[in-house]
Image (tube, rainbow, N blue to C red):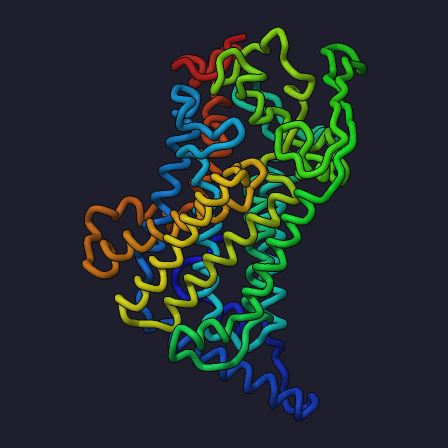
Length: 444
């Protein structure tokens, strides 16, 4: 599933409308006819629009950034994801993708009239992306160090990058379909009034996240590390008994995932294993220090349930940027309404961090959402000026192509599908494959 910067909502609606003839209920048939006529007019208007090239370029740039940090992060830990609090280059990838999904949704449902059919289409697309994410990141591919495949259902990972995007996409699509008025937009105030219920949804999701993060009581908990060739393992106890803690061990984000998803279904290589408390090679992975705390090896999902609530807010903010494209055609008006809120979000994120609400990618903290979403808005504005205003497309043609095929590139590269395919060709023994011959993967 991929939503382009071009208006695509109309053809989705038309394909889902039932075919009714005169033998059916006259009122129902007339309603369906009106809906089809409206969809046809949407298609006619959409076909005459130009593609928003800057959105594809921004998406392609994010794909390049993703590939860079995935492959170079092991050699340069400073650009890899922050072990806990703080911000690195890699921490911008997820919010940038979510921001672009939101912008695209604002264009896709520009002329929507059949809300029920559009909701069904959005649900089907989200389910497809969710299932694809579980397949790719749930453990079917066992990595490039061996040639075994299949899923241990006892340890399958339910959440992941594509799963988070699927949830955020569906919630944002539902808001765009159902939570907007029919008012016409002729000013900034009327734009806010038209989508005021979506802003209420943003505030409600933010309040829900903050209430659960800082209000839930986190009790003591324990986990087990299995020993090879044995069904049992060493049990570690983690002492908590606190509220509002945002450290690695006792935060509500991890507790909710352990309670609902189960600790065996979380990501087994936690990011906080690279902190100074847990690694002598920090900020890289490494052996445990002698006085390492008990939680260092506990599973923790960086795309958990509660953090996905705040991630959805990034998508909804991007949706409002898409509305500006739809309702304002002047470049200066668009840039002004993008740039000012973006700078305010960045400033708010910095202020929250200074006052103790730390920027944290793993928790997807409020300050992290504000800073990264504001940064996305600023970068998108800059790309828009270069590509769509001044037309400098020769420099960005590769990024544009990558942006148009972002999902395919993610599957083939980021999910190690290409390395696994290459690994399947070997000489005599499975460990004598193309990857091991160039130093990738472990030799048998």
